[in-house]
Image (cartoon, helix red, strand yellow):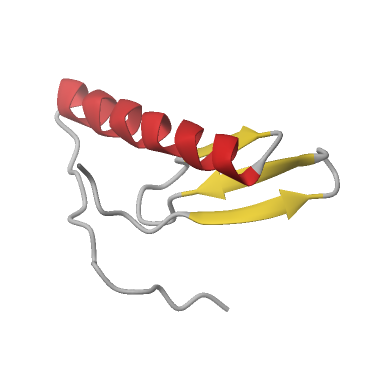
Length: 70
């Protein structure tokens, strides 16, 4: 199980919830509910890591603490 921070927020533009894993660049998912977006983000994290391994890219270690975003 991966322990990356996931941020879930509502997108007025798209009319859906967005779930983003900021420690994994470009890793995000969406859903009609917060729960669906969160579930989809877990799949997106697995896919992101599998793809990074396939191409030999570095995989960041989860920081295990809340990120500070401005």
